[in-house]
Amino acid sequence: MIKKPVTIQLSEGLDARPIALLVQEASQYSSNVHIEIDDKKINAKSIMGMMSLRLCPGEEITVVTEGTDETAAAEGIEKFLVNVKNR
Image 1: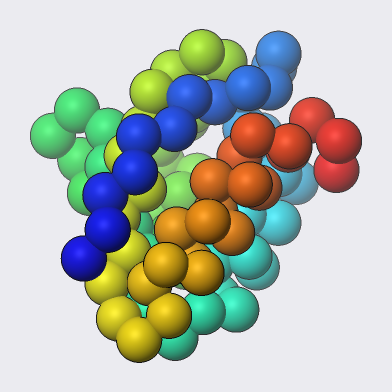
Image 2 (image 1 turned 45 degrees about the vertical axis):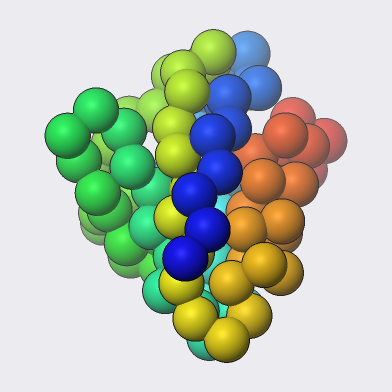
């Protein structure tokens, strides 16, 4: 299991389009991918779950991956969240 803290770096937070792209990114991996914030743990492959988080700019989350490609999944999700403004 990998737990990686990431700060949302998008001036307007994650709205519907970036969240849909994030779910697509997470779905590429066979590992379980979750986003943790406060006391919530949401499956990053669930569009409805991710929409419920309402992530804001500067907010710190934890990316949790577990499975055969957990390292690649953690790196891919982190890269997405850091570069989301370029998408």
